[in-house]
Image: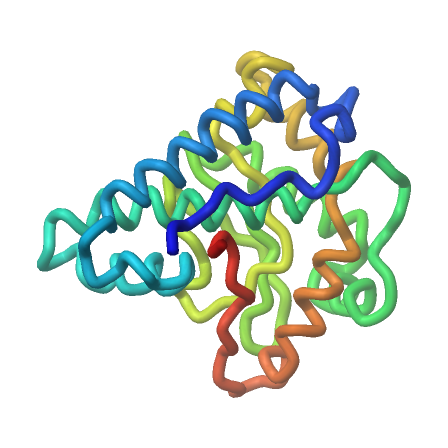
Length: 222
């Protein structure tokens, strides 16, 4: 079965005025679709053809050092996975704040929700070139990290809770080169705290020091 482009969990216009429908149509319908189409072409007829998307990411990451063809597979698979996670990390603009265990963890690990928001904004804005800014669960704590290009924290044994896309196609139509304004809007109004709370619950023993990291949920398989 081929990897399919997942539908957005909201209409194209749902994130306006912070992210326009035109940006989502281009970002989802062209860029994300291209990664999915390229990946299906690259794995067709190979031992990865029937694997779930996350397995393709993991296996191609391991094999690309000895199999040059796996570099392209990894780049497209990881970008497809990261984008599917990104769409679910966003929600229509609201003033909803993190609740329950997630709110407690953010306060414990960052000092307050405001300090967390500032740390995420700074990390995302200052990240050099293309990539991603993540909130992850890391063996007993929450932390922020950025990854370059197609890299993803699932390869580091970490559990992603939320991500912000830092590639220019995520914001160029709306903000031109002003990444800081795009990031500020996402962090202030678009983060999907329900999704983050769900991922934190799924992390389970990950928040107990010394626990073995669980696998994340699968994305993108038809």
